[in-house]
Image (cartoon, rainbow, N blue to C red; front, side, top):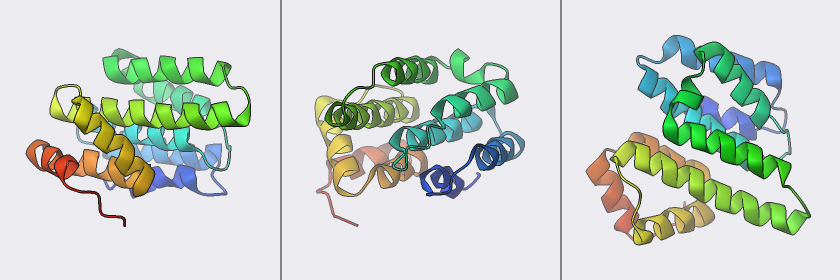
Length: 166
């Protein structure tokens, strides 16, 4: 399986559309299945949503992937919903505090949807709380790694364990 480290390139201060284009091409060429590509693209969407430097590459990412994959994201129900939600959120950005709360909620929703894709069901209220708290304490990238890397049973156990800061 491809390494997900390149998904964090979107968090770099100097992230560009050109670099993003290379990442999308690498995923397209290197992923073995459409499901694997969709999971990696989901990771990129989460990183683009976090966007600490305000690159605003989310829309470009969606367009690049849709062009490369001929509608793969929009055909994938969970990811399609994420795109629609991200677009809606982007249109409704307001004052800074509201944006920050919205981003935290979006991260929680995206990670919850990634959990649902990996496990085959929506997270319980306790699992959702654990996902959100872990994203806050250890960072959304660490939670995303666990969601992508751990097998279903190990992921559920990890969410039930006490949080250890990294």
